[in-house]
Length: 123
Length: 241
Image 1 (cartoon, each protein chain N blue to C red):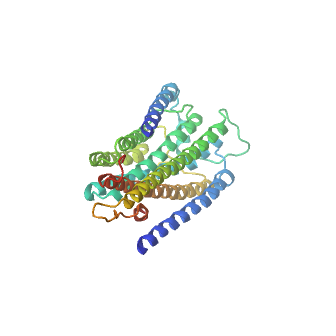
Image 2: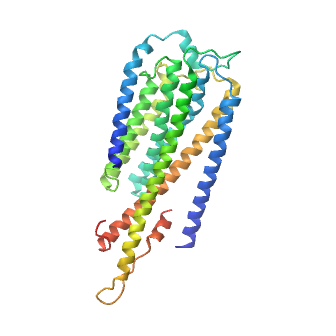
Image 3: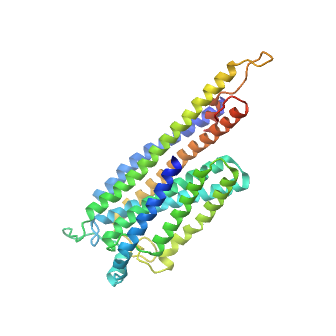
């Protein structure tokens, strides 16, 4: 399940980068002038009103949305992984509990450490 | 549960909580500095504000990949699972910030360059680093418990870190279109833009530390549970382990 998701993300990422590069490459070739150099080496504050030919607002909003979504998505992934580990731990506790109740041939019970102890030491 | 272990676990949890609260507080300050304090840039307009998250993300990426490579080297030297946990955590968090860089950069480029992507040296080398560490993550998802996979992945992480100096110095060594505003060659920022940038560095450093630490703890826990499952299966306590 996880592997399929990772593969899908890698493939979609590759296709996205390829599409962006082919669509924008021609435009980038013709833009090596003094203005571009100047723009690349210093940022200055605006004087008066802001006039933009390409609206920057949606681009900026998209960028900030990406940042929040990516970080939030990763936190959700961590929470899901944590739940998976907790489920495994519960399964282990059940198995160890059942095993401890079953007497051995010599009459003694199985002695196992609680997984909760291992949980604590892992931290 | 021994008392020292419990105390250490509680101390780590408290430290994580403090970093989380500090990150949240710094995030509010950072948003204020970006959108209220820092002026709008004269030629690019409001889209330049991407810069305050984009550049600190690059440093957070360096931290993540650096931790991964260092921990991988330590794992190869000592074969200690704790180092492996940090290697996985660093690679994942570094890749997370690499995604942010590769997503926010083109959105800025659309306005500044008129195109989303160009094969500029810095963009290309950053994409290469992302691919190396995504390969690491995919490799670990194939077989995270095998010793051979772990060693191979460690080698891949160390190989990937060689790309970091290339990324960093690419704008100085090779002529490209990527801005060089905060390097020695650049003309610098408006004085009111620096606070937002420096707060951004602090915030993203904290965020990277927080995520790496949390992910490493989780990986360590997962390693222990996997080990216990194997022990339980060998003892005949779990048939499906």
